[in-house]
Figure (cartoon, helix red, strand yellow):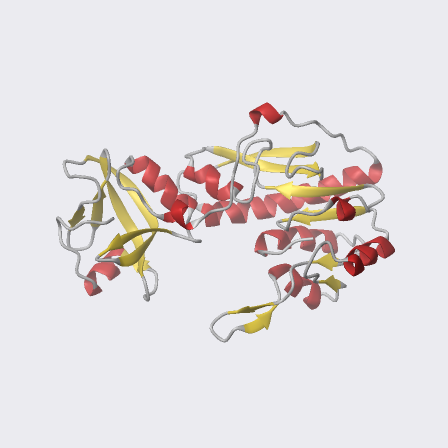
Length: 302
């Protein structure tokens, strides 16, 4: 069970290892793109390409869907980047239902562990497989692996690394479950931290914060959904930045523009903006941006 590209390596490795995949479950087809044509999810596309049985329920509580899963009599249910499963579904398998989560649980429980870890300036994250329980992200831990966050990582690069490493963990978790060698370590709820879904207010940059804090926000939201600021009431997304180390003598949000560079004052230092996208335009380097858009020193980003 999965939806986005993050889940594809896990499905691929199980398929390559010739595990009998009784069904692939993903979200229903939705209109996507400018033409609003119906298209499947990344997981759905993989299933179709490889001739795997595909289920796309509108609701996970649909009686017909639940009965179909019961009829399949699965030993193991693998969940990677999917919706919250009701107990009626995750209690069906004969051995276990487990989830791959992109953090070292109980840290960063929730929908956006990759984004939140980078936004909070973490230098280490990881992966966890755990059995599903009634409360989200709380089940017993089967496997964990620590993964360093590189200073140059953004959410996209970390996502890709975790996706590939996670697929190997999924395969090993399945092997442990099928051989009866899996152990289940209870989580310490007192150590839990949240990783809630990213909302629009999380993306709007507050220049009154430190340069490091703003930089981490930009990294943690790149390439999607993207941190943004406003200039002359137009949305300007920022995908890449760097902390200059130069102490700011300007009020936060003040722009310092040169021929090919653009800096913004924060609470402590100047932050260099390196890749931008003005609303209605494509993503570009700062040098490209400044050749087509006038930004004056002394102007303000809000």
